[in-house]
Length: 310
Image (cartoon, rainbow, N blue to C red; front, side):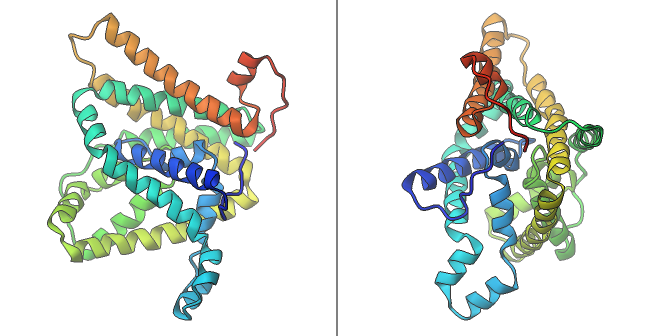
């Protein structure tokens, strides 16, 4: 997907786009098995997001200690991060009850919509990759890896020592920024999800500090790895990330099929199909608005704009 530099937003339209992208990321994070990183990837801010997180370094610390806030804002792209974070927070506050209720009562329809989003993003991004044998192998590796991870059974409630909480936070936040892998699902696998959720409810500050510290260290360190890979091996990295999204479809399928009720009939089948199509068309239209090379939209419009590789 064509990457547009939004690291230093200036116009209301740019701020609105970042806010809405953050909103989509927050909505995805509420749904188990769907990653906010997938939405960032689909909506074209993934590179910028990784580099903005990576900018939290020793220079940023020196600027903060020296109270040079103007330089700090410019160095770490705080305006970009604040706009995205506001969107994420707004989605979690506004949609948690709605999506929570939908996931409890009609999960099939929720996962059908998100499935359409993911399938469209796989096609849109895959159409722009150079399909060398190495990239194809990496796609398979990513798909198989994600397929195995999302199929793991959650651990029973385990230890909740400060070190375990720190490491769990670091691992979960890394998963959160990877397309196709849900950070909350990783916490479930590690047997920490319910404990951390309860810590939020009971305001267990000590436990939350350890989780937050792990998240901070994990995302700052991992963003550097991802940034380096995207800079030096962009095609290969995008191929394996696309594979992650393919593998994540296992979780979406399992959740959607588990929520299917015996009394559902033709009407529910039609609604499920419509939601898949809606999600698919929505992502395809957004991608085409940015790149002018989405394969589905090019078929509809009849235009033969050349596809530019990522």
